[in-house]
Length: 296
Image 1: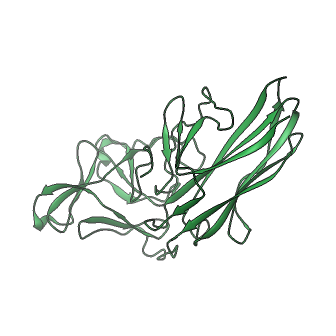
Image 2: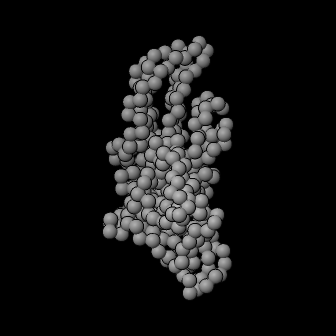
Image 3: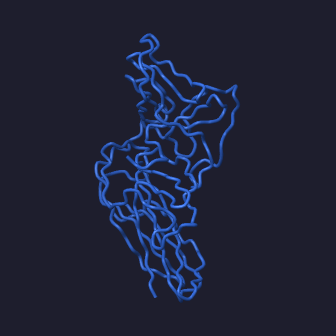
């Protein structure tokens, strides 16, 4: 009987069936996650996805606090004649060996493996840069095991994270500030960190209009930079229900009469700007990378 666990720490994943991509590498905390769990093309030992830039060493020198880093995925595998109930455990560990986060802390699953067959479970858990998550450079660990009828001994993988930025917060009195700095859109997010959005340069308009911000009829947020040029946010997300539990539970329609409302949001990830678009729906933008493409 073969039984094992596979670990993958990756910048993102892509479902093999529906091709949906989710990237955590340098994206804003807890952005909505599309359906990446379609299991119709499950691959033994890997689960329903392919793993983008899986590794054990990551350089975070270009990161800011409030950005996600990586997704930790575990595959638990049993072959016949394993039957009964297994209890799954999965967690991230700080360099000193203490628990950073329990992704699974005793989750019971049935194991009913047919003769000549196999049973697998897949679970994933992301972590980012924050005082309560990844907060310093060092050798972190990810760990998985199971107990019960499908007991599997603990397996750990060391993950080296270098050049982790400071996670110091600016204080609650600063959260909510939004301004133009040079040619960039800056804000203090709800987790009290300064984030900077570098826009797409659309050319010169008027240096006397520096600081103007508006929403166009394509639902894009624009502003005028210090050089008088017009800039557009590099990406936007019309809010939708996340397939991970720590994201939004659905879209938000405020009405077209609310077009142009903009605020520092204190929902789910606490690190993004929100606004009401021309179509009346809530949009999310941020300083991190767009999450629905391969990491860069």
